[in-house]
Length: 416
Ligand code: SAJ
Image (cartoon, rainbow, N blue to C red; front, side):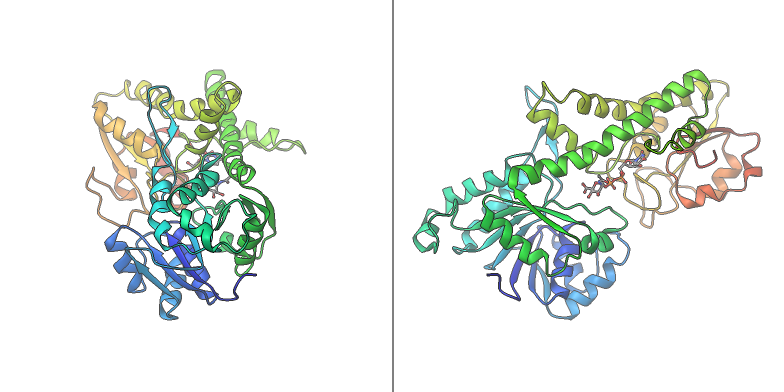
């Protein structure tokens, strides 16, 4: 049975760990959030946040003020340990340039191991290659053989309960989705999944589905791959339509009138830390079989390069054109620049010497030292070529009169 109010350690205080830790604290659990970033730990302990996400500041303030949330640089004893460490990146190996790198999860597991008691619960939230949850169990078994001495139920695969509960929240809507989304929980055994479910029930209004850990890991990878494959279809269509002289936005709108067709939107490529990464974990695990998933990744990764050639072709008509790059974030109405194709394209254009590049990101609220940012009004006055890279609301609202006499490359269809 799960204690009503638990002591919980959350490893990692980023986009997933901090909202989860704060949510649990507001439900009455005693939560210690652990991060290696000292500045983030101090910021959180003063009731403030170090990342941008709507309503997160209110949640963190109330969690810290309630006395139920504190941040720390080191873990300590608890009933439950949630691993929400940085999104699993990949690293190049001799045989695979996109091999998953789970060293952060290994490190977090080793960091909590000394504090475990028999019967504690470990939950992996980070998106992970299939087999990672079982790997956590082996690391714990290797480091804490002594736990078996005090294990109440020796039939369990492990002296501690271990489950994977992949996060599914959409940046920009994290607080709402944390509460409302359905969740999948996969345990290394049934008891682990059930124990994790009891904890999630204390803050999650969505349905909770139990399975084994490998299926839960794969479900998360599949969700993001599904989206990636569908975006690749839209991106491929945009390139085909460009060749055939067809307006891709109108085409998709019309095709989507069919009751069983729902094509996504093309863009300059796929950004963020999840969708452009997770499909590679499936490819790494089953390279022979995961053909479509790999090609979709390649199509989406190719899109920024295709676009750069399009801009070059247009710029060639000018002597020294001013190119306005509208948007740098990885998607609309956020300030997150992680793995953003818009950043990649802007950097490349600046380096290409094609002309003078004026970058504009209305959501950037911090100083930016890589290159200068310009106000939208100035870009609209001075640019010869306008390249829309992000569908921020500010760009949709631009007076169409101002677009006349400019060369437009609208990768998001904001002026369709
Ligand atoms: N994009 C398009 N066209 C579209 C939709 C998206 O080009 O029609 C692009 C976006 O501009 C962006 C990228 O794809 O560059 C990813 O954006 P997104 O909104 O699709 O997804 P993320 O990365 O913000 O969050 C995803 C979500 N996964 C799914 O929707 C299946 C979220 O639920 C996950 O929790 C998150 O990944 C994660 O952390 O894994």
